[in-house]
Image (cartoon, rainbow, N blue to C red; front, top):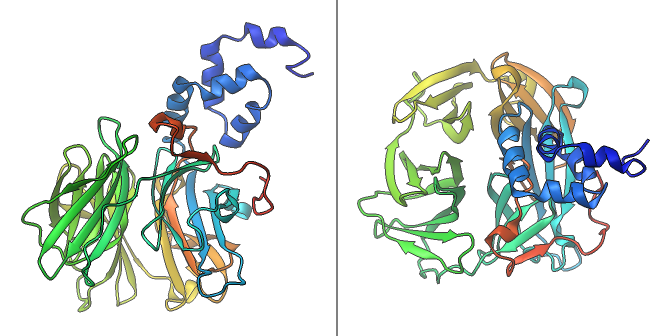
Length: 395
């Protein structure tokens, strides 16, 4: 018995009750509800519902990730461009712990995103994903749930310095301004330039923070509580999105007995900045930063599972919150073509999922939302598809 055949069922449900019910549903179910009738579609598009769903999804225990697989076709004119953006969830069912919810081929968009260049994800905030192309020309913010994207205005001219290094970041200030940040470093002159674009504007602003001794930045900026964090040469670089000021604070303490600098990766665990360290002695340490402090405390210490994963054959991708307060490390195992979800608390492999390697594979944490990009203006917003492309996998 359908809602369509009994319209009174729809009329008698109060709007606030429907908001409450819809906001508790999985995203796939909500997308189905949008197709039932115009009223339901309007409810799901309502700003109040968007905010309510975002609030509840941020407390969801199921971890979601966005995986971007790209293939560089600049050297092969006969190759078909590939850039799959895959939304996956880490679920509790052990037989299907890494579940692909949606897969989009960005090269099938009209026009194709980033042409034939590699596309790299930087970060995701409130369901929006920021990506940049390796030619440093194409910059995008996407909402994979709504299958829409917006182009960003061109960057300011880049100085012709061969040793210039840079890092991107994406986040939202305490005032609700979504910002893309690019940090440029000229180590020869000990100069740092910060370029900031606020979504909804048509310009980039240049900032020149003083007294910063930076030689390089590692990876994209990690977003947490209106701040962006990067691993720098010997410290962590902190950019405040609200005040647009910068500061440096120390790494976690060195690993005892290890004569080599460990490999480090920043992340967010349990709502705090975290740093995972891979030691040359074969161990893994997870450090957490104390609130409102530059001090660190050690959360987890384990021996790296060399026998289970193979120390020389793995590529650590992402450290995320698991169920029941656990920490899960997502690892790609080379040669075996599989993703492994590894629980650091129990020192056990949770599950393995077949996954083919590509020229470029990046993983970021992700929370789906229905936040519409035309909130920033519609001039630069595009639908990903005007029809159902062959490259798009149905879910």
